[in-house]
Image 1 (cartoon, rainbow, N blue to C red):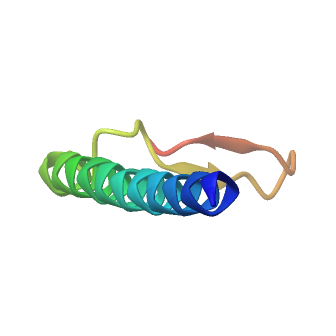
Image 2: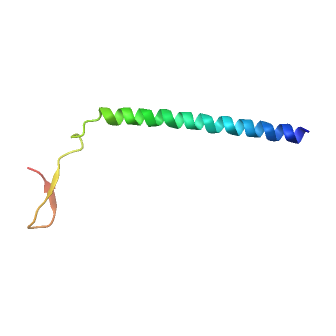
Length: 61
């Protein structure tokens, strides 16, 4: 009987841990989404263009 109680306790604990992880992952996802929405899309630096003579990328002037 004690084995059954132990297995039930482990199952309930595992379920609780999985639910807690899901909730925490959703919070982090929301935080990252809000930060990405606030970010300036042009704040990543200058755009690069391909120089046909050298074949290298250079900053757009």
